[in-house]
Length: 360
Length: 100
Image 1 (cartoon, rainbow over the protein chains, first blue to last red):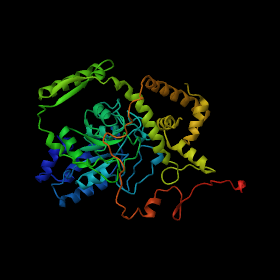
Image 2 (cartoon, one colour):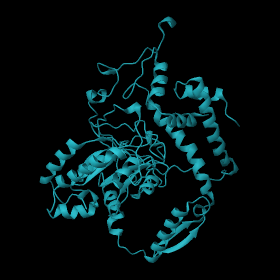
Image 3 (cartoon, each protein chain N blue to C red):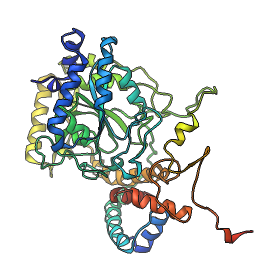
Image 4 (cartoon, chains in turn green, purple):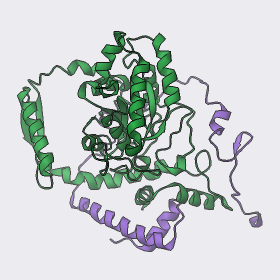
């Protein structure tokens, strides 16, 4: 077992005891990237030089930092100061933000090492990472298959052990679905728990950033770092945020877990259903009470999403006009410049959603 | 109500997306299919349902009115496709022939 195969909580024990150094962990992650990335393509940009320099610096840092020496991959729709943040779109291919997203700042301050920026469906619109404006990402378990999306790059990077932890963003399943496709843990936190400052906006009333990790303990560890009120995001909620790792007692007694009847019926793949049923009995073994709940409105969730998300995307993506940053096409007047820039810069799925959301 | 090619032409212009005639055909089909799918929402009576915009009631978020340093102009302009001094340069907006 290589260091890159271990979880963050395992590595933190070794790092704090001085058994290994941050350089060992980062070196192991980049060795894995060198051997596997060519067939997976989880990343849009790798920051090996910066990461190794940072790892060396961390030798003198406080080892009790919550993510001391842990290599983290960042989805490429979260701003990183001076480093490409493209949203996998040609329209932002050259964009280097002048600031860090709040989650990126918090992850850095926690002592982590940023490995690179991961691939996604353009502007997080899609469920397979095939809609990246640059190239598709492949599922590490079978490179002929998709990793899911839109956080498919992060999910694949965690599954292939090309990072220890990753961030994803979820508007309509974009963390949870690729996590399930790649066999990793992914969580969409409650809206308002994690700041979106510096997350490139897709559908603001739904967008949330969350952890993508190898196990639940790592998920809690990363959530501890990124959750919290942020005055830079007016939707972020001011409240006490617990230490999520404290909840991991292994005991589920007294908890009630609902199984949604409508989602367990027709249309589920037999293998998936079997896994879900196994998980349910495991939860029951741990002491939780399982109850069946009915959500008769659940069938309306997807059509509702197809109205709300594009409407918000239409407004949010209006800013890509070739004026302040990003791509600009040559044209004779300003309207032609807007129209041609957006034609050349956006892929078909993004165009489709912008138009859908612009319909009167 | 079916969406027409002319509707899509208008929406593409409102969206500031240049589009060929062939693309208009393709997108008319796609948008029509999505709208048809979403039309199942019209079965629902939402008259008594309050709109939701946040799971937690957060409103009127203000910060203290303290002057802070903003981004230096050169860093903001570093990403501009055509900076000009302290400005963003754009192609002409008003046709010179249309003088008043």
